[in-house]
Length: 260
Image (tube, rainbow, N blue to C red; front, side, top):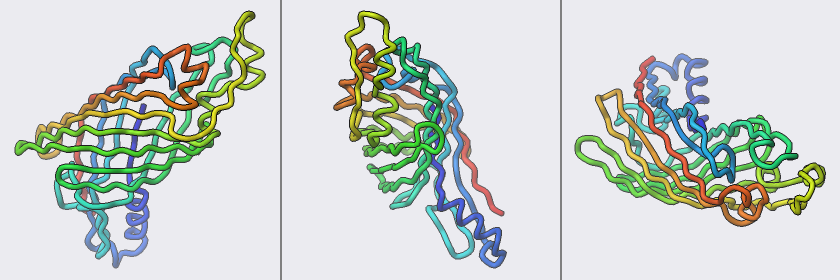
Protein backbone atom coordinates (compact mmCIF):
# COMPACT_ATOMS: atom_id res chain seq x y z
CA UNK A 1 0.00 0.00 0.00
CA UNK A 2 2.98 2.30 0.28
CA UNK A 3 3.12 4.85 -2.51
CA UNK A 4 6.42 6.70 -2.42
CA UNK A 5 7.34 9.18 -5.16
CA UNK A 6 10.68 10.96 -4.66
CA UNK A 7 12.71 12.48 -7.49
CA UNK A 8 15.73 10.53 -8.75
CA UNK A 9 16.98 13.73 -10.37
CA UNK A 10 16.96 15.32 -6.94
CA UNK A 11 19.15 12.54 -5.58
CA UNK A 12 21.62 13.00 -8.44
CA UNK A 13 21.84 16.74 -7.80
CA UNK A 14 22.38 16.23 -4.08
CA UNK A 15 25.26 13.85 -4.76
CA UNK A 16 26.74 16.29 -7.26
CA UNK A 17 26.51 19.14 -4.76
CA UNK A 18 28.20 17.14 -2.03
CA UNK A 19 30.94 15.99 -4.37
CA UNK A 20 31.60 19.51 -5.68
CA UNK A 21 31.64 22.10 -2.88
CA UNK A 22 31.68 24.96 -5.39
CA UNK A 23 28.21 23.90 -6.54
CA UNK A 24 27.03 23.35 -3.01
CA UNK A 25 27.44 26.86 -1.60
CA UNK A 26 23.67 27.48 -1.97
CA UNK A 27 21.82 24.24 -1.40
CA UNK A 28 18.17 23.74 -0.46
CA UNK A 29 15.84 20.75 -0.40
CA UNK A 30 12.07 20.77 0.16
CA UNK A 31 9.98 17.62 0.54
CA UNK A 32 7.13 16.12 2.56
CA UNK A 33 6.54 12.87 4.45
CA UNK A 34 3.08 11.43 5.10
CA UNK A 35 2.37 8.59 7.49
CA UNK A 36 -1.00 7.05 8.26
CA UNK A 37 -3.26 4.10 7.54
CA UNK A 38 -5.02 2.76 4.49
CA UNK A 39 -7.54 0.15 3.46
CA UNK A 40 -7.29 -1.66 0.13
CA UNK A 41 -8.25 -4.99 -1.51
CA UNK A 42 -6.14 -7.88 -0.25
CA UNK A 43 -4.94 -8.48 -3.81
CA UNK A 44 -5.89 -7.48 -7.37
CA UNK A 45 -9.46 -8.70 -7.84
CA UNK A 46 -10.18 -9.45 -4.17
CA UNK A 47 -13.64 -8.82 -2.77
CA UNK A 48 -12.34 -8.30 0.79
CA UNK A 49 -9.96 -5.67 2.18
CA UNK A 50 -7.00 -5.28 4.48
CA UNK A 51 -5.96 -2.38 6.71
CA UNK A 52 -2.26 -1.54 6.77
CA UNK A 53 0.18 1.34 7.28
CA UNK A 54 0.35 3.81 4.40
CA UNK A 55 2.96 6.39 3.51
CA UNK A 56 3.96 8.91 0.85
CA UNK A 57 7.11 10.85 0.06
CA UNK A 58 6.56 14.02 -1.96
CA UNK A 59 9.35 16.08 -3.57
CA UNK A 60 8.85 19.86 -3.86
CA UNK A 61 12.18 21.34 -4.94
CA UNK A 62 15.96 21.19 -4.85
CA UNK A 63 18.68 23.80 -5.43
CA UNK A 64 22.37 22.95 -5.70
CA UNK A 65 24.38 26.07 -6.53
CA UNK A 66 23.04 27.50 -9.79
CA UNK A 67 21.11 24.31 -10.63
CA UNK A 68 17.48 24.22 -9.47
CA UNK A 69 14.73 21.60 -9.76
CA UNK A 70 11.20 22.56 -8.72
CA UNK A 71 10.77 25.37 -6.17
CA UNK A 72 12.62 24.70 -2.89
CA UNK A 73 11.57 28.12 -1.55
CA UNK A 74 7.89 27.96 -2.51
CA UNK A 75 4.82 26.40 -0.86
CA UNK A 76 5.58 22.84 0.17
CA UNK A 77 2.37 21.38 -1.23
CA UNK A 78 2.32 22.95 -4.73
CA UNK A 79 4.91 23.22 -7.49
CA UNK A 80 3.75 24.67 -10.82
CA UNK A 81 5.24 23.53 -14.12
CA UNK A 82 6.64 20.33 -15.63
CA UNK A 83 9.07 18.09 -13.81
CA UNK A 84 10.49 14.58 -13.78
CA UNK A 85 9.83 12.60 -10.63
CA UNK A 86 10.59 9.21 -9.21
CA UNK A 87 7.84 6.59 -8.97
CA UNK A 88 7.76 3.77 -6.42
CA UNK A 89 5.08 1.25 -5.48
CA UNK A 90 5.01 -1.62 -2.99
CA UNK A 91 2.66 -4.56 -3.64
CA UNK A 92 2.17 -6.89 -0.62
CA UNK A 93 2.61 -10.65 -0.83
CA UNK A 94 -0.36 -12.60 -2.14
CA UNK A 95 -1.15 -15.98 -0.62
CA UNK A 96 -2.55 -18.58 -3.01
CA UNK A 97 -5.01 -19.75 -0.37
CA UNK A 98 -6.53 -16.24 -0.35
CA UNK A 99 -7.88 -16.77 -3.89
CA UNK A 100 -8.20 -20.31 -5.26
CA UNK A 101 -6.84 -23.42 -3.58
CA UNK A 102 -3.93 -24.65 -5.68
CA UNK A 103 -2.58 -21.28 -6.80
CA UNK A 104 1.02 -20.50 -5.90
CA UNK A 105 1.93 -17.61 -3.61
CA UNK A 106 3.10 -14.36 -5.25
CA UNK A 107 6.02 -12.66 -3.52
CA UNK A 108 5.84 -9.03 -2.40
CA UNK A 109 7.06 -6.64 -5.09
CA UNK A 110 8.85 -3.30 -5.12
CA UNK A 111 8.50 -1.24 -8.29
CA UNK A 112 10.88 1.64 -9.08
CA UNK A 113 10.73 4.00 -12.03
CA UNK A 114 10.27 7.53 -13.33
CA UNK A 115 7.33 9.78 -14.05
CA UNK A 116 6.53 13.03 -15.84
CA UNK A 117 4.25 15.50 -14.05
CA UNK A 118 2.78 18.85 -15.09
CA UNK A 119 0.88 21.02 -12.59
CA UNK A 120 -1.04 24.27 -12.97
CA UNK A 121 -3.14 26.28 -10.53
CA UNK A 122 -6.35 24.30 -11.09
CA UNK A 123 -5.30 21.11 -12.91
CA UNK A 124 -2.49 18.56 -13.31
CA UNK A 125 -1.59 15.53 -15.42
CA UNK A 126 1.03 12.82 -14.88
CA UNK A 127 2.36 9.50 -16.12
CA UNK A 128 4.57 6.98 -14.27
CA UNK A 129 6.50 3.97 -15.58
CA UNK A 130 7.92 1.44 -13.08
CA UNK A 131 9.90 -1.82 -13.08
CA UNK A 132 9.58 -4.54 -10.45
CA UNK A 133 13.15 -4.72 -9.12
CA UNK A 134 11.91 -7.08 -6.39
CA UNK A 135 9.13 -9.56 -6.99
CA UNK A 136 7.48 -9.74 -10.40
CA UNK A 137 10.32 -8.23 -12.54
CA UNK A 138 7.72 -6.79 -14.89
CA UNK A 139 6.82 -3.33 -16.19
CA UNK A 140 3.83 -1.42 -14.81
CA UNK A 141 2.65 2.15 -14.69
CA UNK A 142 -0.15 4.66 -14.28
CA UNK A 143 -1.51 7.74 -16.01
CA UNK A 144 -3.86 10.25 -14.42
CA UNK A 145 -5.20 13.77 -14.28
CA UNK A 146 -6.83 16.00 -11.66
CA UNK A 147 -9.00 19.04 -11.38
CA UNK A 148 -7.89 21.01 -8.31
CA UNK A 149 -9.61 23.46 -5.98
CA UNK A 150 -7.36 25.61 -3.78
CA UNK A 151 -9.03 27.60 -0.97
CA UNK A 152 -7.56 30.74 0.58
CA UNK A 153 -6.96 28.92 3.89
CA UNK A 154 -4.78 26.32 2.14
CA UNK A 155 -7.36 23.56 1.74
CA UNK A 156 -6.71 21.66 -1.49
CA UNK A 157 -9.26 19.29 -3.02
CA UNK A 158 -8.53 17.22 -6.14
CA UNK A 159 -10.38 14.66 -8.25
CA UNK A 160 -9.63 12.93 -11.52
CA UNK A 161 -9.38 9.75 -13.59
CA UNK A 162 -6.75 7.04 -13.25
CA UNK A 163 -5.62 4.20 -15.53
CA UNK A 164 -3.17 1.43 -14.60
CA UNK A 165 -1.28 -0.75 -17.08
CA UNK A 166 1.30 -3.53 -17.13
CA UNK A 167 3.10 -5.73 -19.63
CA UNK A 168 2.28 -9.40 -20.23
CA UNK A 169 4.59 -10.58 -17.46
CA UNK A 170 2.78 -8.37 -14.95
CA UNK A 171 -0.61 -9.60 -16.17
CA UNK A 172 0.43 -13.27 -15.92
CA UNK A 173 1.80 -12.74 -12.41
CA UNK A 174 -1.37 -11.25 -10.91
CA UNK A 175 -4.17 -12.45 -13.20
CA UNK A 176 -2.87 -15.64 -14.85
CA UNK A 177 -3.08 -19.32 -14.04
CA UNK A 178 -0.50 -21.88 -15.22
CA UNK A 179 -1.26 -25.43 -16.35
CA UNK A 180 0.23 -26.75 -13.10
CA UNK A 181 -1.93 -24.44 -11.00
CA UNK A 182 -5.07 -25.38 -12.94
CA UNK A 183 -4.28 -29.08 -12.43
CA UNK A 184 -3.89 -28.50 -8.67
CA UNK A 185 -7.39 -27.01 -8.27
CA UNK A 186 -9.92 -29.04 -6.26
CA UNK A 187 -11.63 -31.93 -8.03
CA UNK A 188 -14.66 -30.82 -10.00
CA UNK A 189 -13.32 -27.37 -10.79
CA UNK A 190 -13.99 -26.38 -14.41
CA UNK A 191 -11.34 -23.62 -14.45
CA UNK A 192 -8.63 -23.90 -17.09
CA UNK A 193 -5.17 -22.39 -17.40
CA UNK A 194 -5.30 -18.68 -18.24
CA UNK A 195 -2.58 -16.60 -19.93
CA UNK A 196 -3.56 -12.89 -20.10
CA UNK A 197 -1.93 -10.26 -22.28
CA UNK A 198 -0.53 -6.93 -21.18
CA UNK A 199 -2.21 -3.56 -21.48
CA UNK A 200 -4.47 -1.36 -19.38
CA UNK A 201 -5.92 -3.55 -16.65
CA UNK A 202 -7.93 -0.97 -14.67
CA UNK A 203 -9.55 2.44 -14.98
CA UNK A 204 -11.01 4.49 -12.19
CA UNK A 205 -11.32 7.73 -10.25
CA UNK A 206 -9.60 9.24 -7.21
CA UNK A 207 -10.80 12.02 -4.90
CA UNK A 208 -8.56 13.52 -2.23
CA UNK A 209 -7.91 16.51 -0.03
CA UNK A 210 -5.15 18.22 1.96
CA UNK A 211 -5.81 20.53 4.93
CA UNK A 212 -2.83 22.43 6.40
CA UNK A 213 -2.66 22.64 10.18
CA UNK A 214 0.37 24.94 10.22
CA UNK A 215 3.21 25.92 7.92
CA UNK A 216 4.83 22.50 8.42
CA UNK A 217 1.96 20.12 9.22
CA UNK A 218 -1.22 19.00 7.48
CA UNK A 219 -3.77 16.21 7.12
CA UNK A 220 -4.32 14.41 3.82
CA UNK A 221 -6.74 11.75 2.66
CA UNK A 222 -8.03 10.08 -0.46
CA UNK A 223 -10.63 7.60 -1.72
CA UNK A 224 -10.09 5.70 -4.95
CA UNK A 225 -12.26 3.44 -7.12
CA UNK A 226 -10.82 1.19 -9.84
CA UNK A 227 -12.62 -1.22 -12.17
CA UNK A 228 -10.61 -4.08 -13.63
CA UNK A 229 -11.00 -4.46 -17.37
CA UNK A 230 -9.85 -6.47 -20.37
CA UNK A 231 -7.88 -9.65 -19.74
CA UNK A 232 -7.67 -8.81 -16.03
CA UNK A 233 -11.46 -8.76 -15.69
CA UNK A 234 -11.69 -12.14 -17.47
CA UNK A 235 -9.22 -13.76 -15.07
CA UNK A 236 -10.61 -16.66 -12.97
CA UNK A 237 -9.00 -14.96 -9.96
CA UNK A 238 -11.07 -11.84 -10.53
CA UNK A 239 -14.24 -13.71 -11.51
CA UNK A 240 -14.36 -15.41 -8.12
CA UNK A 241 -13.73 -12.00 -6.52
CA UNK A 242 -14.81 -8.65 -7.97
CA UNK A 243 -13.84 -6.22 -10.72
CA UNK A 244 -14.65 -3.29 -8.43
CA UNK A 245 -11.70 -2.19 -6.30
CA UNK A 246 -12.03 0.47 -3.58
CA UNK A 247 -9.17 1.86 -1.49
CA UNK A 248 -8.71 4.78 0.92
CA UNK A 249 -5.94 6.45 2.93
CA UNK A 250 -5.64 9.07 5.65
CA UNK A 251 -2.41 10.46 7.04
CA UNK A 252 -0.51 13.23 8.79
CA UNK A 253 1.93 15.17 6.61
CA UNK A 254 5.14 16.92 7.70
CA UNK A 255 6.86 19.37 5.34
CA UNK A 256 10.63 19.88 5.41
CA UNK A 257 12.65 22.80 4.02
CA UNK A 258 16.34 22.05 4.49
CA UNK A 259 19.29 24.36 3.94
CA UNK A 260 22.74 22.72 3.95
